[in-house]
Image (cartoon, rainbow, N blue to C red; front, side):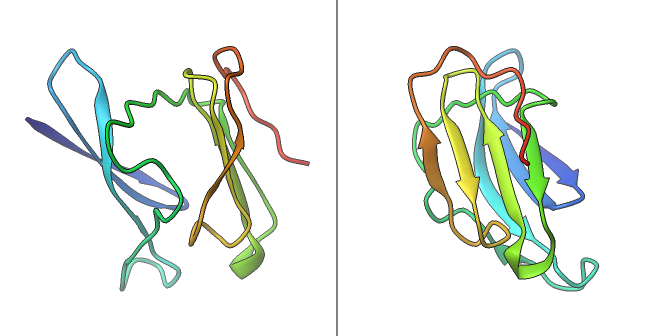
Length: 105
């Protein structure tokens, strides 16, 4: 099992999987204070057997602070969104063709 730590401007994601195979998001965290402390952020996202591939252009955000809206799409055709800076998530759309890009606006 390989573990990847993926840092973004919006938080840290822990991915687990086998080399050459799909990786699964096993943990999500968010730092609102420059990284001094971290809080898990994944309520509402698939937790088990969620082998999602998200392309670089399939993520976007709108706003800032606690009202920050986050959106991402997966090649599975699912789109997820958060209206509270990633504290909770909901499914925005399902069964689309593979999502290549997302633009919030």
